[in-house]
Image (tube, rainbow, N blue to C red; front, side, top):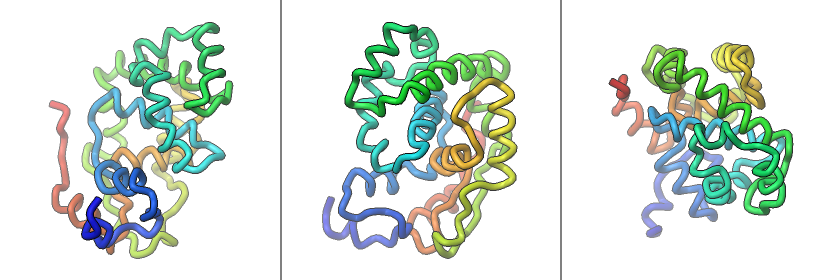
Length: 203
């Protein structure tokens, strides 16, 4: 990246010495996602992050994509003990059996939601009435770890059989996938995303 890129005002949590993290913040985090495969990817990755840093997961993301067949829920849902043993031996991902099992369980629950609603996108975006919530935080100190909305999403996902979807994980998921715009107001992405104000893109 050019020096000018690093001069852009960003959320204070972005480590400017990590180009991968900067790219993630600038082009992905908080950008509305309506693609089911990518929504499933973030659901798995946010669950994998539990107890760890996002930096750890971000740098293992390509390893996860390879290990989990591009995060295709139809394939992941059919994983059995053979695949689990392979994943437990894969140093490119977090080798936690509970999280691996959760990814498989969540793939099945994800497909059930898709069967009921047509797409997971239609299901999850209904929680925000299909338009991103804009919070307008001035400082990262203002940004909560969870909210009443993430509590609601967590309860519904748990009811549907999902694992590793506590309220804090759900809030991170909602932020990452753009259902919530939690870029601070001094960040260049806050203005961009607010102006774009994307509506329903699934039809």
